[in-house]
Length: 354
Image (cartoon, rainbow, N blue to C red; front, side):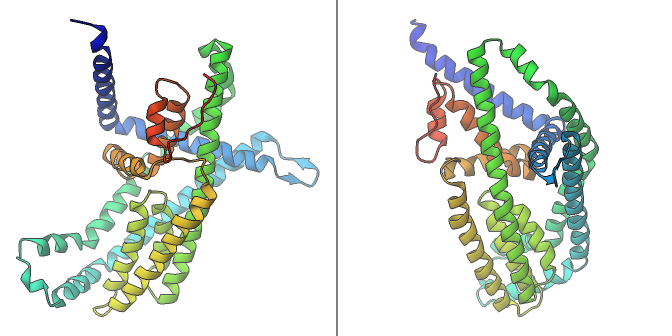
């Protein structure tokens, strides 16, 4: 048997086994890894926010860097705390009228002329279960409760990351050793930092714009709890494609559920919010992103499904940054660059000196 001829097959099998093992460990170790990853995200945001605060000047006085980091920590955790408290409290208020909404939706469904043709245990039963608004609210509340429960551990991780980051350069130099290799690693890290910072900055702007305009539209139309849908639309827009679809359908569904004759209000909400999502998500956001985040939409959807399976809703929020990191790292090595090309949208990736 020719061992060399079987080498590619052996390498492929070893890679597939390693990927499968990694996915298994991520699923099993969710309680261990997810708080750490969220802490790294917060640590990254704190550094970005601190660098912005450093640029501010009080007259001719420069703000000391430690105070900038302290201010960034306080601002970030205050914002996260306010959002969690607001959404949790609003979900409780929404839960008090959920049964009325469910009754109105079922009444509307039964009033349609073709519903009698569906068997009781078929599509009609599936749709009735899907209209269980109370279950949706409970699932959302459990998600926020789970994140809040990990808040102490996440805060501890963030503290240690901030404490250790001063020694990062020395550790990297000692770990890599070779100056040329260190230069390449630093180039990868800087590229990852720049692209993720750009993605988060633009996504924050477009999501905030979408959430604010959606709130104004829903308030003018008289939809109940417009501030809740504005915040949820802001958050859901961080989930690629699926988040925007849910952020369009759910307010329209609630508009329909407000009363037994809310069909026209529901269609108006669906058209206006849908047009807003398409305009910002398909026109404004791509122009702001440019070609720097060159990711295939199909790969993004697959990545969304993968991380949604691994870490649920939290994985859906993190899937694009993970994909950005993966593509950048793979593009910097000749053997893995073909994979990066497959992950890209147009087949063009940065080609650093090998």
